[in-house]
Length: 221
Image (cartoon, rainbow, N blue to C red; front, side, top):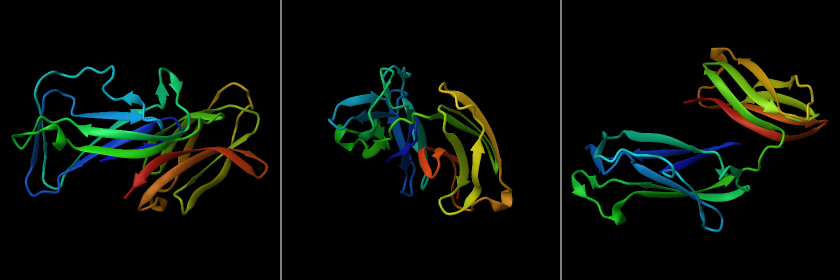
């Protein structure tokens, strides 16, 4: 299967191949390219292909997935085609597995695993960009850029509990992009047992909140 994890500036395509059988799955591939990922726009035109511009080893490759284990890979796309960001809207990702043999049996094209999923590309954030996170276990360093004369704030929550209530980010109000750096510390015994810890940075003008930019600090389960 393919799971699109959508962010403000990129989507991470998580590829999962699970072996539900009691015996190992033995895939043989003709090259080092195990899979293809493509994205089509609302009109059905292909706008992204994972393999484009990449080079793969032209030699047989083997992949073994043990019983009840999952093969996982993540590939990212920055929503850009020829350097320009695509419009917001619904797109379709198709992930195709490219083995030549499965358990020593030749495969024809009808047996290649295909997963097709729709996802939404968000509108570009005009005031906040390039938010990145480092750290774990309650200690995080968040960096990013803001632009504009309004106030920028942040909080940290998991969808149910607010761990850090709204705080102001110190900016000059420049009309050019300016960097910010924030350290977040949450006691390890206060962290959620399950779910995602989310850092939200956003514009506030009086009661109006807009241009929210959420980033996952860490996933817990």
